[in-house]
Image 1: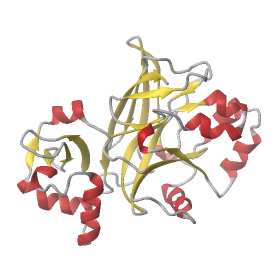
Image 2: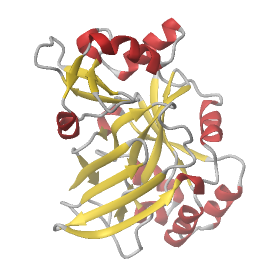
Image 3: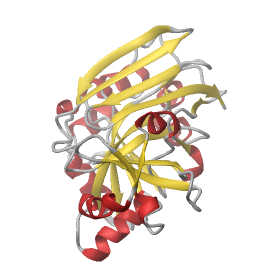
Length: 294
């Protein structure tokens, strides 16, 4: 099933709703059935407490829930989760290793990461720096080479994988390329990350390593870049990334781990204010954001 966060329903006291699209393609407002299910994190807590799956809890509540219009979901979806932290992995696809070599004056560090057992993991964003569908991602005003990085996001609750989402790890390639020690500045700033439009559980995303992912960038109503790939091209598995993230690291209740990108626009391309970035991943959905300078 797929879970969305929306503004509250017409007859609800809560300001936001957790909405599920079930296996038949119908949408139900779980919060209308129980105000204790006001968010995906609360649903995950209920699943933990009852020793049931997230989808099993939702199915139990659907008969009591109000239906929601599918068009309403597409137009009004918020961040499906508000993660306490967003982490990201780097150089998990061969093309990203080649891109980092091209941008960097010290390419050997990226070769070492790609060939190493230990993956590159870094803290990407805090809640205040993360945006949702149709909100604006940001590019730094002191950078001249900025790109979106479409990525499969793993959603973890209390350290366990509970679903998948779409993520955009917006990056300043010239800042990172100047010196690898500048990575935090290239990655972490206002509006540097987007996630959405939903969380799909493992019942819907049966194999996270067999998903088609595509990127489209529009400028002045024309396509400036488009490309597609498959998560089967990942050189590091989702299980390995999660295992290393857990090592000696107390995780917050809910977080998103972005798994790296295989869609890299050419070196001549940089994001500009007003660009529209659309990322599609099979069995999850489309994440759309416009671009602003921050």
